[in-house]
Image 1 (cartoon, rainbow, N blue to C red):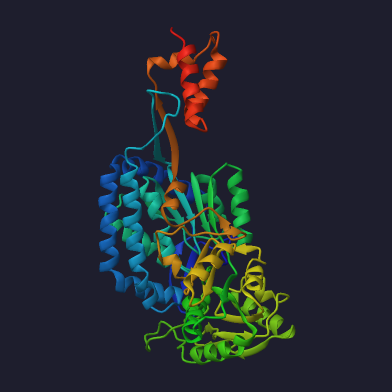
Image 2 (image 1 turned 90 degrees about the vertical axis):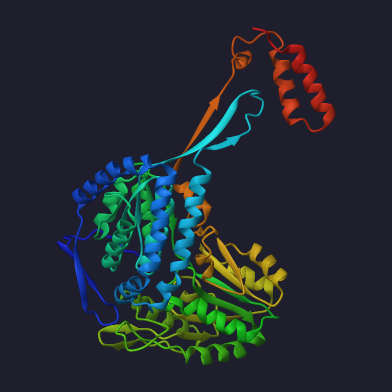
Length: 519
C-alpha cells in the first residue's frame, strides 16, 4: 500500500480534498508544519496527564461511549468516507462492528492489567514480583488512504485504552475523514488535546516521528524503511504494517463455485486496494480454465460506480491516481511475458475519475511483476501448479509475508497448509476478512512489516513495561560477602527449582538446608 513520505520543495498552505470519482473539491484543511506538529504534541502531553489521571474506569467509560457514537453516526460516516475515499457506503458501514469490538477488546485488556500482573518470584522465596503496564505518553500515527476511517479509529484505540494521548497524520488524500475522526472522539467525551490530527505531506510525518514516544505507520515498505530510519535517531519504537502480495492456494478438492466467489471477494473488496487482499492465485493445472471461466462470469456482474448517489455499486474508483501507472505496467508486463488477459485490463475514465475493472489473467508465471510485486488493485492472476507442495513453495517465494488463503473442502488439510505458509495471517476458505476479526493479531513477515497492529498484542505496543519486586529481610542471605559453602547453596537452589526429577530436587533441598547462611 502506498503512502507519501517524500519531502516537497515547498508545501502549499492548505491541503485540498477531492472526491476521487469525479475530482470535485470537497474541502480543505490547513497544513501542519514542523512547529505546528511540535505544538500539537505538546498539547497532547498536557492532555495525556489528565487522561491518565482518569484511571482505567474513567477512560473506559468514555471509550465505551464512542461505540454509541459510531452506531448513531454510522450513516454520516458512510457518506463522508464514500465521498472522500470512493468506496461503496456499505463497506464503512460493515466495519462499524469490528471497530466496536476493538473498543471492547482493549478496554477489557486495560481493566485486566490495571493492577499489574503477578508473576513467580522463582527462588526469591517470600518476595513479591509484579509487572505493570504504563502509558508511553504520546503515540503518533501515520496512516494510509485505502482505509482512512477504519484504520484511523482502530489503530488509536489500544493506545488510548492504555492511557496515551494520540496525534494522527491522515493520508493527504483523506484530510476530511481525519477531521471527522477527531470529532467522533470529541463527541464521545475524550478531553481536549488527547486526540488530534495534523495534516500535510512528508515533512509533517517526519516532524511527528521526531516528537512522539511511539509511532505506528501503515504504508509501503519503501516508506516504512524511511520511517524506521527517522525513528532510530530518537530511538522511538515503531510498529509498521506494510505491503503484501498475498497468495491464494486452490486445492484439488475445492468447491469451485464457492471458491470463485470467495476469490473475487478477496480481490475486489475496496476495489482491490487492500494490503491483505488476494494478489496471486495458484490452482491445479486442470482447474485453471474452469475456475477462470467462473471468475469471469462473476466479475462481469459486479457494478462499478461512484458516490454520486445514482445507485448501489460494488467497486468504486481508484482512490489514489498514481496507482494507475502500476496497474498498467503490471498488466503490460504479464501480457508481454505470455499471460492471457481474460477480462478487464483497461482503465475507464469518466466524470474526472479513474475506474479499473476486475482484471482476470491466466498463463501466469513467477517472472511476471504481478506475481512478485504488490499491484494493490482488483487483479486475479491465476498460475497453474502440479501439487500442494509446489503451491506452498511459490506462495513462500516472496519478499512479503502479510496474508494468504487456502481453499479446500478438507479443513484439516487447509489448516495444516496454513501452518506451512510464511505469512502473518492465513485464512481457510476466506480471504481479507481476518482483518475484521479484531482478536487476531495483524501484521506480517519480511517486507510486510514489524510488529502487530491488531489483537491484544497491539496493546503492548503502547505501554512501558515496569517490573516491581518487593523482598523480605531474608533476601540478605543472598548478598555479599559470600560465606563458606555459598557455591553449594547456589547449586542447591538451582536443583530445588529446576531439578530434572524428584531425586535431584530433594538433593537440592539438602544442600540448601545444610548451607543456608544465618545472618
